[in-house]
Length: 279
Image 1: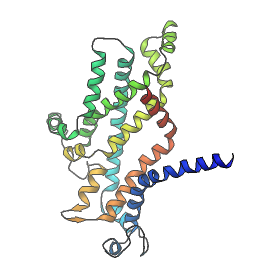
Image 2: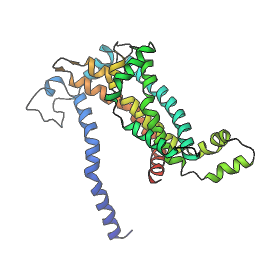
Image 3: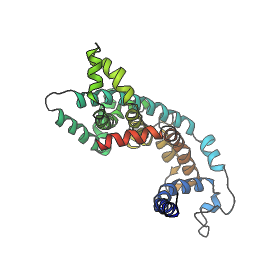
């Protein structure tokens, strides 16, 4: 590599530096706040981006042992995993049908599914509350398992539609010529090819479920049923008193499962997202 190529590469990486700082800064500030002592957090003369009086883990201890954070996290994991699985199964079937089958108004139906995803949850939680009460699931984490697919299924369907269209039809036709049904062709041929798209949809659905707040706040209230996103904010904000250290500690711990998933499945995520986007 000559000097000119090295300089161009260095300049390209330096151009990315502002975006990296913009993306990493919230996590840095969040972690820093969770490790500061209370007297430094509320000291106006303290430097906000540095720890000057020594780190402390008291906020993490308060969060883990004086609140029901572990129960909230368990509820979040249960709801998120179940809602993601249900939405991925339904979204896969719907996306395959819209991408491969020809029937009346198939294009309009695909557009309608996308528009459904764009409807904000702040408009839907009131009618969904009536459905939840009718099902007898009030103040239950199972209400979230039922309601989360209302926005996850349209998203998974829309994302996977684009990916399935990148899979050549010939591979399915060859399987069906050899005697496979369309379901068998989907299960044995298309889905193994579409693994990056499925992983991408699953990661997005998991992230949306994990971070969801409005439905969780509306449909659950007891400490044994609420999720981490609701528990951290409702239990650590009391009137005009904000327990900033424990709040940021909860945010740090709650981000760990998402970080682990993206680290392990980053390659699938990027390939699945780009394949669906370019189509």
